Image 1 (cartoon, rainbow, N blue to C red):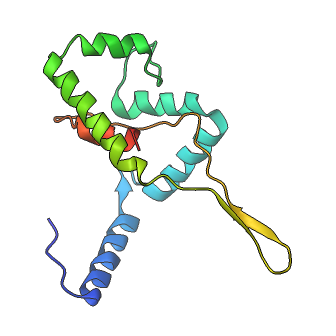
Image 2 (cartoon, rainbow, N blue to C red; image 1 turned 90 degrees about the vertical axis):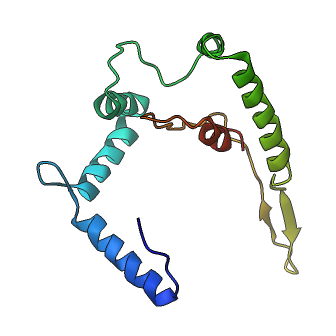
Length: 151
């Protein structure tokens, strides 16, 4: 655990140390993390979801040959049946609260015309779909999923 930092200089020193550690770190076998991540990025750009699925199998040890990234409505309903009704109700209540909170943060389109007649502005458009990595492991944090997926 890092100590509490009290000054900007201490923050800068800690950031320099962390940067040095990160850049010096290698994956087992002596492979540089930076170059490995760059290779993975290129592979994902070239092969899209197929590369992500391959990396999921490799790093998360997914063995199901029919693994898909998109969760189907049927899988959601099946999962609901495996947990207590109180848990489902708590998740639904949290969803409503998170949506209400973030509704106030929705960006607004705007445009303007300057003195020379040039029109400029900003338009916000929602994405059709997004991917989200939810780490597994020894603990599960449904709130992490909610806070990342809902806003």
